[in-house]
Length: 233
Figure 1 (cartoon, rainbow, N blue to C red):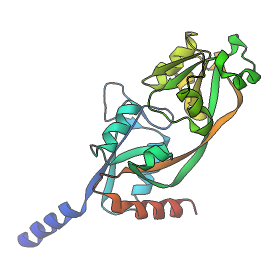
Figure 2 (figure 1 turned 180 degrees about the vertical axis):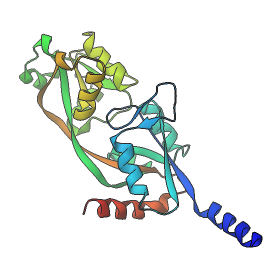
Figure 3 (figure 1 turned 90 degrees about the vertical axis):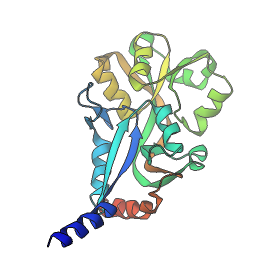
């Protein structure tokens, strides 16, 4: 009996493992319940991905929150197996493998109500200062404007909280956020009643679970997609 238990323990240790993912602190999708405890990660996207891995036997998921640009860099190097969620683009496709879409959302322009920025001013970016999250992708319409330096001024932040702070302090005219995250960050910083969304969405965002090309667990991707289909039935 003792020999059987030892054999079982060895087999189990080889079959059970954790997939390491990173993400930035972007409520409501991923955030720390306790700022002093890095392991206290919670959020809608974490719950969604944990549910996916419940459909894959003997595999768990561990998520670490980092600044967005650093998360992408470390995941591309294989330090982490992947990213909790990210939108597809050509540059990322060279370094990562993407699951089927988890969900869709919109990228929106946020502004202070007191500035009374007319939505039609969005068509003339040279008159606007903009706040962006470092390392983020802003879609086929906005990205060329950023690369060509069309905006009057471009200021980058490391975290969504810092980005919303730029808007609150009036240091930029607009900030670009995924819609739900923008409203959630504003709510947590008690400025939800001071801001508004203006104009039409600048992009449709397709969030996907992402695995690094250097991950040892790329074979999980078909199983992840099967789980997504099963959950969405």
